Length: 68
Figure 1: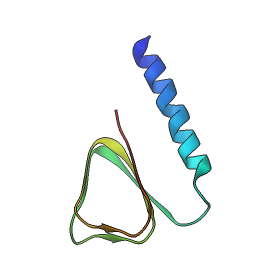
Figure 2: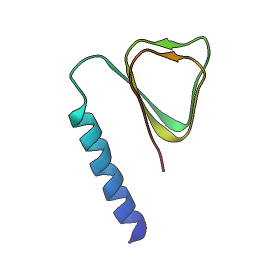
Figure 3: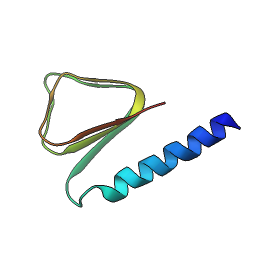
Figure 4: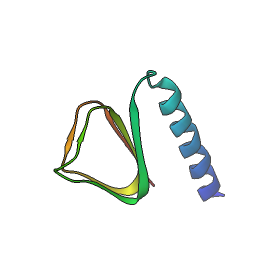
């Protein structure tokens, strides 16, 4: 029951974030571990969905990380 409630709350949070985001260029990446290397430069808003996020590169926009 506790996990179902957490999953439901996470789904609503993701929906709110995506609906509240302005229309435009957006980049998404998901996985258990997400790593943006120093060689990467992202010129958009960047959304990460995963357990571990490591950003060594440049993001020229907003960064949103969601995990469990």
